Image 1 (spheres, helix red, strand yellow):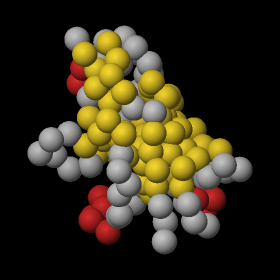
Image 2 (image 1 turned 30 degrees about the vertical axis):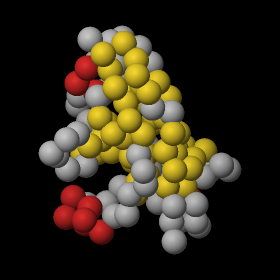
Image 3 (image 1 turned 135 degrees about the vertical axis):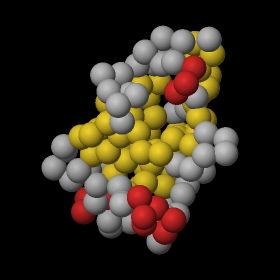
Image 4 (image 1 turned 180 degrees about the horizontal axis):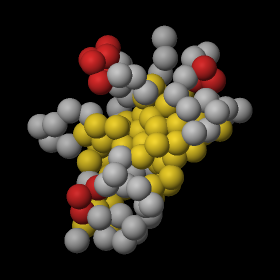
Length: 119
């Protein structure tokens, strides 16, 4: 069974930076596209950034140019470097496999890591 352990969140001021990490147990990591998702109260998880096994990345428009996703297959870890943070970036951040939206209900989530950006 896959386990996802996110860390690195915290409270920062507008314009600050954070680096999130996610350790993924199991053998699927090297075979799978991974992503970082954000959840805010009352809303479903939304994909913020994704990275394929070959390192190709994609970003939601609202984080382009500010966030960078990367992965280290030797450590089964995916990272999200966050720069120029804004209050609207506040939320709980989770990593998980990148799947079609219609399949997201099948995902099992870790505990996430909270990011709070103060104005």
